Each structure stands twice: as structure tokens, then as C-alpha cells.
Image (cartoon, rainbow over all chains, first blue to last red; front, top):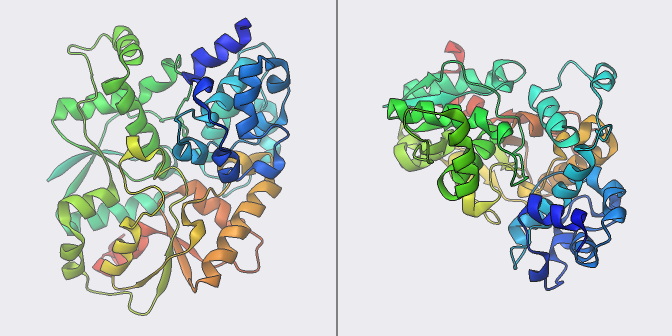
Length: 126
Length: 263
């Protein structure tokens, strides 16, 4: 196993070997249509050690952290945590942030709750 | 009865309604919310990485403060409720996170998840009781058809949050009944509104909220209630034809209890 695959397993604390490929995670995912790599495929990519594809996947930025896949996984694999771990690998690299502070002023609107900004900052950048 | 109260960042700013109607209603219901001094923002989303420690400390400080007061901790915002309960679970059940957080904080006595975290609705259900609430209602919302919008953060993961059945919840429906209105059950009530995605992928949030409004109005809802400022924001920004008004549950509670005008 590559170091990156090990890191994904360490950060997520998930065991992808438990997956029985039922597809319930992808069936539950509200962002399924927007994802190039689907939640159930994330598990397979980690098992295949193809981390390169995962860290370049736009799915990292489409996941809503709604925990539907985590709640509904009958084998407790928690695909959402694997997606987050791949996101962490990207964000922990210099320049890996998906959201830059400079972008914020243009994205603001007067009704926007603080909760949105702190949540986006936590998910999109270190 | 006094509780340590964790309002969170948004209730001090864009969601002041959620906060002030709750405070007034709590007094009427016979309990007091004592705001935790110097609370820090929970961060809005729970840090999922098992090696994330620093980003959980703000929650640990609030939890430990409540422990020192010997009080349960109440929160209202779905996000704060989610983060505080999950960090509390880490401190109680995840040895590595708990040890490292305690090692950093050097508290007089280590914090090991002793504080009980309650959502405001759980206090109504488990401490006051919906039957008691019903007796205290002076302005019942008779005839109103209200959909409960749970979203994701109040319910999942069910085993950690222990708020209600994550797939078939009823706490908000029971609340709606207690204030004299009629709950409308619809499939999308525990599906995501899009959350923070609306910042950079507005069309995705539009798609999510349209599905929610189409679904709840099909089932006859005239309005929605939520406990989440971000859900309310995304729903209010919806361009769906089926859009209906979205209220914080505390506003309807204050109205039913006859304290809305005092707020």
C-alpha cells in the first residue's frame, strides 16, 4: 500500500476492506450527479491504491458532509470520511485550499449566516 | 432549572431570532439559559479527520465549562448541536483524541465527556414533555399545516447524536402537534439543503432546495420550521415556484406561548 493510501486510512479511521459493495452510499448521496468519482467508488479506489485519481477528483468539493452515506452504510465503512481524508491530503499541501480568503468579498451577500462561512472555511481549506 | 447555554456565532448575528425567541420561551417553560462566558465558535462542521485535535478544542472548552458548573449544556443551532455532541463523544469514547486534547489543555481535572449536551427540542421532549407544553400553549396554531425540516446535522450520525430516529424522526412533528398545528410528513425532511455548497456552487443548493419545497408542498405543507440558520438561508434563497415561508421553530414556540411580543 502506498503512503498516501495509508494516510487516507489513518486520517479517516475507516476500513475500506469491510465494504460489500452494496452501493447504498451512492444511492443516498444528494451530490451523486455532480460527482465524477461516486462515494462507493471512493472505497474501491483506496483499495486499488489509486490515490492520484482521488486527490484530483472534483467530488472532493461536491460532498455536502450530510452524513447520509455514513448513517446508511451497513458495514460502517463511512465513505464520507474517506472523501474527507482525500480532501485533507489536498488541503494539507501548500496551495491546496479550495477556498481563498480573497474570494470571500465577492461571494458575500447580506443575509449570509456566519455558519456558512465558518463551515466552508473548515471544509475547503486548512 | 438552569442550563449552560451555547448560542454559537450565527445566533449572535444573522440568526438572532432563533436565539431571542428561545430565551423568552425557556423562561415561560420554566428553565433558564445561562450563556457560557467567552464561548468560542464550534467551527460549524465537525472536523472529520481522526488526527484533528486543535479544531475541536473550542467545543471542549465549552463542554468543560458546563461540567464545572454542574449543568447540562443546551444549544439551539443544528451545527453547534452536531459539533458539540460529536466532540463530546470523542472526549468520552476516543482515547487518542481525548488524551491529546487533555494533554494540551492541562485542565485541573481532565475532561472525559461528562457533560450532557441537549438540543433545545430535547429539553422540551425529555424534561418538560410535549403534553406539558401543550397545556401551556395560549395561542394554538390551529389549522396551520407545518412541515418539519430536519436537514442533516440534527439527526446524523444517529448513534452519536441520539436526537431521534435518523430515518424516521418525530420530535419536530410532536412539537408541531403540541403547539396546536398539524404536522406534514414528507420524504425530503431529512435530506440535505446543500449546506455550505451554496457559497461556491449555488446551482447545487438550488437543486436541493427545489426538491425539498416541491416535496413538502406536494404533501400539503404551508410553511416549514427548522433549527438551522444555514438551512433557513438556503431555503430562503431558493428560486423554486413551490417555495413557502420558513421559520425557526422557536418563533412559532414563542407565538404559541404568548411571549412573542415580549421579544
